[in-house]
Image 1: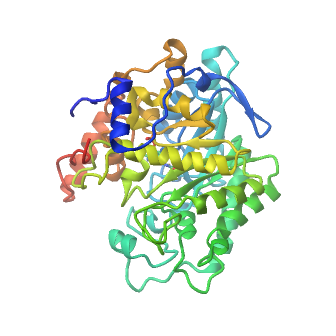
Image 2 (image 1 turned 60 degrees about the horizontal axis):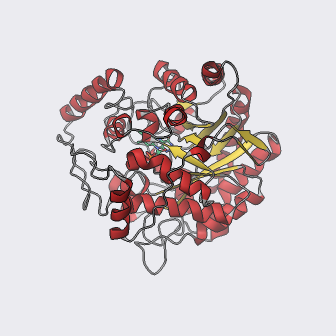
Image 3 (image 1 turned 180 degrees about the horizontal axis):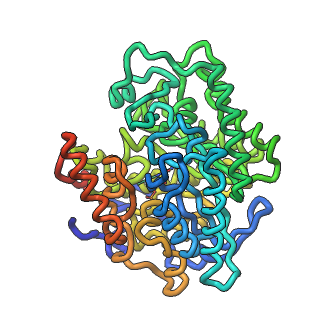
Length: 462
Ligand SMILES: Cc1cc2nc3c(=O)[nH]c(=O)nc-3n(C[C@H](O)[C@H](O)[C@H](O)COP(=O)(O)O)c2cc1C
C-alpha cells in the first residue's frame, strides 16, 4: 500500500481545508492521560477501547483463547475504558457462530474474562490502575445467522437497500411487537448476568443496522408500537434501558448509537428528509437527551452501516475485496464522525461521550483527540482498528507524548476482511504472527467459495 501522504500536521490540516472540513488539532496530548470524574464515576484517563468483534468465541458463545488475549492486551495497554464487543443476549440471535453470547452456561467463563482483564490492567502499575468495563449487548436482527452460519434474518421493516444487499426473502414476515416485548426481557436478563460476571455496565447496542438500530429508523413499520413516530421507533431502546435500570440500579447504563444511518428517508435514522444524502443530527440530539434523562451514563456515537456503507463508520484507504472505493475522502468521513459525537455531547453535556473513527488519522489521532476533548466535543477518544494494531497506545503516549505511524493502523480493511471471510479478526499488519495466517486462511476459504480475490481499490480522492 502507498504510504500515508500526511506525515506532518500541516499536510493534514491543508487537506482538511481543501475538503472544507473541520479537524481540530492540539500539539499537547496530556489531557487524554489525565484521570477525571464523570457521572460520579472515576476514569483513569480518556482513552477508550471501542467494541471490536474478534469472531473468536467458542461455539457456545463463551470467550475463547484469542478473546482473552485481546482483552488482556487492551487492559495492559492502559486505556481507562474498555467497551467489550457485541455479545448476543441469546444463542439464537447471533450474527455468526463465533459471536460471543452471555448465557447461564457461559457466565462463569465471562466472569473469568473480567477477572483476567482487571488483573492485566493492574499488573503494569503494581496495582494502581482501575479500568471501567462495559459489555455491548446485541441482537443481530437482519444480520442474524443460524448455528451453521447460514443467514437467518429477523426483519424490523422492509427495506429496499438492505433487503437487496441481504437477499431477504420477499414474503418473510416482520418480527412482531410481542416478540419485541419479550426481547426486552432477554436484554435485561443478559444485563443481570453481565453484572454477575463483574462488568461495570452494559451497552444496549443501537448502531450499525442491527435490530435495535434498524428499529430507530423504522419509519415504515406500520401499526406497531415500535415503528413510525420518533416515540415508537425509540421505544424498544428506551424501555429496555428503563427496565434494566429498575432491576439493576447500580449498573452503569450505556448506549452505542448511530447518529445517522446514511440510508435515505424514510428508511434510516437521522436522515435529512429533503436531502437523503445528508445527516440531520436533530434526531440523535433528541435521543441523547432522552437517554440522559433515563439515567444513561455513557454514550458512544457512530455512523452508518458496515455492510453497505462502511466508509461512514470506519474511514479507510483500501476497501474490502471486490468492494467499490468509498465515494468520499476518508478525512471527510473522520470530520463527520467528529461532528456527530460533538453534537451528541453538546446535547447531553452531563453524559460522557466516546468519539469514534480516529484510526485513519494514524499518528495524528491523539492530537485530534486531545483537541476534541479540550473543545468539549467528546469525553473519551475511542480506538477501534487502532486497538487491534496498537493496544498499548495510552502507555506509548504517556512515555513519548506522541505515537508513530509505524506502530498504528494503516486503514487497510484487512481486519474487516477477516471477519467477512468468516475467520477470526485482528491486525494482520502489526500483530502478524497471530493474524496473518488467519487472513490468508480466510481468503483461501472465501475464494474456494467463489468470493472476489484481490484487495479493493483506494478511496476516491485520497
Ligand atoms: C473487525 C471489526 C469489528 C468490529 N466490531 C464491532 C462491535 O462488536 N461492535 C461495534 O459497535 N462496533 C464494532 N466495530 C466498529 C468499531 O468499533 C469502530 O466503530 C470502527 O472501527 C471505527 O473506529 P476506528 O476508526 O477507530 O477503527 C468493529 C469494527 C471492525 C473493523
